[in-house]
Length: 453
Image (tube, rainbow, N blue to C red):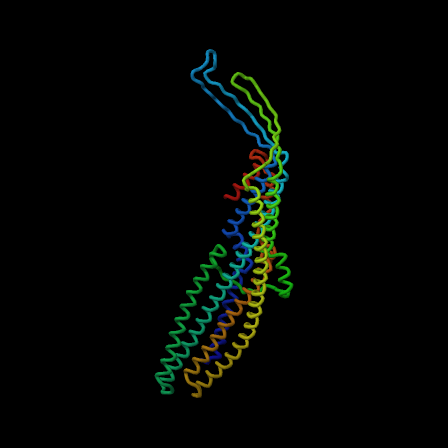
């Protein structure tokens, strides 16, 4: 059997296999959908966001009345003649802050900024989850292709070993040629075992990233990247969640400075109380309280200075975030361009190596080439094909890394068929600090029970 006939037969087997499995092959979109749905990291950060939403509710509650009750029972000894053994009273009190220099409103606005920043953190986590799933998907595909490549190489080398053995039997080659062929077969078997081990690791990573075992994965094209690097960098500065989160953090700390300064102004509150004793006698009172600091031992100016330092820290964090995101865009584009160039070169390498291998193989049958020449040519072709697999994987990963560096690797931008998490839904339920027994409070209880299930 000639090498050309063997290659044609192998190609036919591969085509038949692809035709039989293409119907059940799963796509990258399906894997990303499952990764988004099954991600424990996303669930964790959604809970973090809901906790931040509650901070807004708690800040809002400071502007609302505080109503409380109290009951007392007392016994005195010795007891006066005619006095009750036990005396008691029941009281109901209410308090409302009517002026605080805007401190509570500033606190609400600051918490809103922190909520917006936490939403951006959640969006960044979403990008990390999807990019990890893409890389896991491509790793499973590439390791499967490496296994197929190693298996095909092993078949060819076994054919070479049989040919060398036949030629040795008729005295055309020496025992050295047979030993070289045997060594190549053993090396190919070792590489095939390593490829299978890599495939098992890739499958484990896929299961961790997607939430299930991989199936028959279909081929993937690189993500469309139409923007230039400068345009992508400009968009990233406006859209990347890391930059936006840092911007919200700066705004929150600036509001914190203004809130710290309100501690110097007077505060006023209204309080009312109604009570009843054991004899049914009722009493009521209404009062107005006004007060402010005179001397605090330097605590108040220290809080202001601390708030300023926190603002400076947030501004520095924003500067670092912009540098980091800009670097991510540049790196992603550089890797993508290198992968594309490598892929073009490896395609040409495979073509040339195939021609060379077929020529050397034919020359060896005529005695013009040694078995070592054939084995070296086969190894060169194998390396070229492996480089193609690696370059294809690198191009796809780099194209999606570009989207991630811009802030576009999200379920919304990719149009994934998922029930997207609405970060404002829970916030809208809690932002007004509803009471537990109110209709809105009961709706919140139902939402939390559903999330817990």
